[in-house]
Amino acid sequence: MEIEIATIGGYEEVGRQMTAVRAGDDIVIFDMGLNLSKVLIHDNIRTEGMHSLDLIDMGAIPDDRVMSDLEGDVQAIVPTHGHLDHIGAISKLAHRYDAPIVATPFTIELVKQELQDEQKFDSGNDLVKMDPGGTMSIGDSGQVDLEFVNVTHSIIDAINPVLHTPEGAVVYGLDKRMDHTPVLGDPIDMKRFREIGREGEGVLCYIEDCTNANKKGRTPSENVAREHLRDVLYSMEDYDGGIVATTFSSHIARVKSLVEFAKDIGRQPVLLGRSMEKYSGTAERLDFVEFPDDLGMFGHRNSVDQSFERIMNEGKENFLPVVTGHQGEPRAMLTRMARGETPYELDNGDKVVFSARVIPEPTNEGQRYQAEKLLGMQGARVYDDIHVSGHLCQEGHYKMLDALQPQHIIPAHQNLKGLSGYVDLASNQGYTMGRDLHVTRNGNIIQIV
Image (cartoon, rainbow, N blue to C red; front, side, top):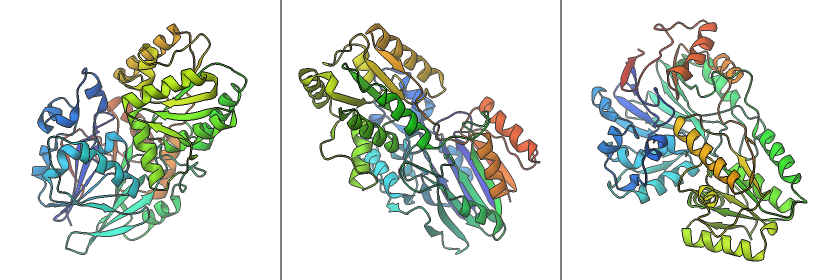
């Protein structure tokens, strides 16, 4: 059976992930993501009303024209998890393909919301839920199957999809870390990865996320970030001024920890910002997390400002607002607070806790720098980097190669500089550039079989 892999997006940058695998006459697309930095660099752009061709020209979503060079029918569109760099282009591109969108329940719910917000295109794609550990047949040949293997990442309900073909398995390895003691959800299923590496024809090709491939050691568990966060917030228990926290809105485990520790130090947590309300509300509705009954979640600008007014009236020392804006995004809550555009007044000595790292990309770095400077000018004191990454460091990559023992490797999810660490690592394991280690670019097709 002929196996081809089209590397469509995310092979020259972090963002706008999209890959297609053709097995015989059947094609499966993995991810359709947005490159958020290409949007944020422009003022007040709303992608919902934009045409896909304009977004392609901006470099914001994948250029999927290479799909016309694959001879076969798309049978499924499979987003691995709910981050925008993996689902943010579905509303712009999925309607071009007569295929269902297959994902885990939480991811499907987030995809559904993306499709509802879309103003330019109508999607007729069926939405199919499949749990981690589930399998389904692809196409009519009876020879190709799709499997979801549970992984741990900085968002719940993440999986690595595996396409089983007569030539071996194609494992799409974006995004994960090896967490054996996660705060929410099940541990990474390394047992299943080892089985896939040793059953049938083994692993034909492994497509790997190289975000942290230049970093030595292993990525710590989310429990490490939780304990760090506990230590920081407990140290503020006697402070009688304002404490504000920010983190990734989609990081439900981290939000859960913030809510718990706020209660522990005698403060009422409140979640503020559109995406904060969206992700936490969705997770609670689907029973992935249980929040206190009195936890307020507010996304609309007016209700957020009303919450800030209530906090100021009843005393900042009684509340812990958890807000959007960990990357210094111009329209996010924390940035508005730093510019003095909300009823919440920051005073000398107030604490701002960033339970997130800066995404290493110039736009984010510049915006975060600006936000921190503005907070400092208001007298706030910043607690930085209370976080663990959602991506594998080098030891995790060695473990995955040992588990899967793939015949071919395609590094992804980085620019060429970011891929270099993985190329060195794979070369140390006996892989050779141009033979079984394929460093590629967006828009290429690699014939594996």
